[in-house]
Picture 1 (cartoon, rainbow, N blue to C red):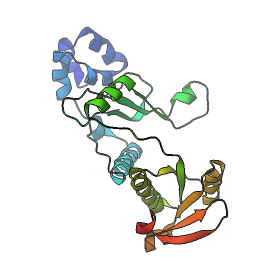
Picture 2 (picture 1 turned 60 degrees about the horizontal axis):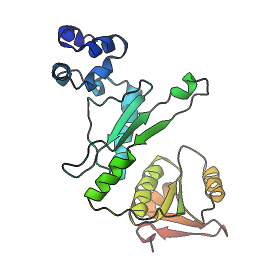
Picture 3 (picture 1 turned 90 degrees about the horizontal axis):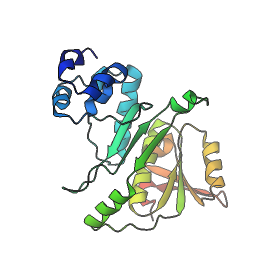
Picture 4 (picture 1 turned 90 degrees about the vertical axis):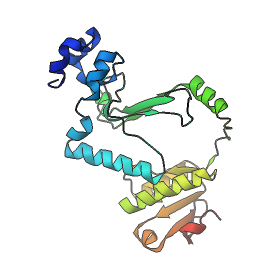
Length: 234
């Protein structure tokens, strides 16, 4: 608000109203006079609290683990006011392709505001017609979604990183994978795999990280064996 106070005269009527109730929305205005002011606006990333900065750095690290390219857009603002922390949009790689294919973000406070319990959440919306148009333009064929064959469980932060890398690697080879989320115990993770009817579980812990191995567990017989990480697909 302090920054835009010197530009009030140049703002469009909509942005003058937004300045009072939601100044971040000014960054997304398409009017030339408002865009000029937005170009020099302070970057929100430079004013993160320690907790949000740690969360953002962790998110970038996870994207790197799965080789997902991304660009930080300091002017990206979603249209609704309930988002917290991260918002995102998905863009096609092909030059000249239709713009934004989808977008979303976190809304960790929304459920509580609606009367529910505090619940971390994330959501997104996608333009199906636009996605189909870009797939056709790039001549991309979409293979059938594979049935989940492997459940990846882990113990510890380093093991979580390795689980994320491994899940991405297996998916690129057409293997259906479900990776455990959150900080559940190993027992709870394996129970989830069992409930999902997945026959094979991969377990990664500190010892497996040190030895570049994984434990491969048959969920039907409960038999398990240690396998070198680079031989797992075999």
